[in-house]
Image 1 (tube, one colour):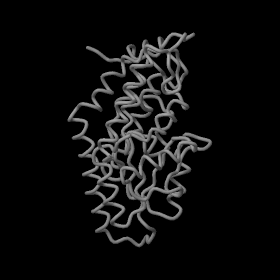
Image 2 (tube, rainbow, N blue to C red):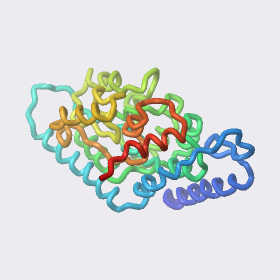
Image 3 (cartoon, helix red, strand yellow):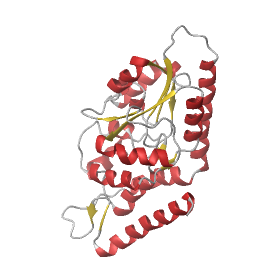
Image 4 (cartoon, helix red, strand yellow):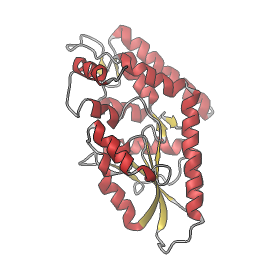
Length: 277
């Protein structure tokens, strides 16, 4: 059976599991639908963003644009004579930078579940996240031109094997224990970026979250995130490439002021943050 047909069958099985669980109380993505003791979260606000990633040709255009531009920057660096003889590196995030997790986000909406580490591990083990448009082609190109590819992700260590399987299934280059730098004791990626810099020269950093690019963006209020972007404006389209992701990210945590709010309070915070005329 070819890969595309097999993926379709497995994807259909996931959808059937979602439908069946709604009527039988079966467990899907780590959550039981039977006799829930707490109100199910209302994730309806995520529908538009998830649909945009899954159905908007504009999203595909933006990701192709991002990786096409990354190739132009990489080629420019190849033509530059440098005294630094360290091997070039391209540092990428994994989730919704090179692998599309919108099906997991859709499952959260349809099942009215919140994100959970165990549930996300179940999604990882399915190993069906498809490449973000343009990501695979660019990383193959950069690797063929001599760059090391480092996948710096906040997936947990226990997710490394299934992530390796997922990346290799689609032919992502340079996938190994050395190049998959996953979360250990902190979500900050700064220490892992420094590990890459010990032996390599990072040409590009690519991610869907500003935290994927530099420590200065971490856990900042909205105004300070804006100010940090303005301060580093020359890095964007020069060394930093941002992949669009309206489904989730640090931007949403900043709206909630990094507090553990109830779903009702989050909804109020989202509405009160809107600016109208």
